Length: 49
Image 1 (cartoon, rainbow, N blue to C red):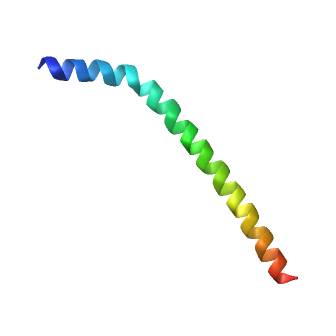
Image 2 (cartoon, rainbow, N blue to C red; image 1 turned 90 degrees about the vertical axis):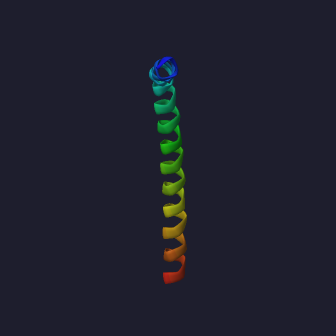
């Protein structure tokens, strides 16, 4: 019983940190995807010409 209470307290404390980290990773992923799509479209345009 005592350990679950500690875990709940920790989750409450760590949740904002996890959210920030998750958002940061998501933004990085979106940026990488955008760059990848940009390169990919340039490649296709080059092949068309």
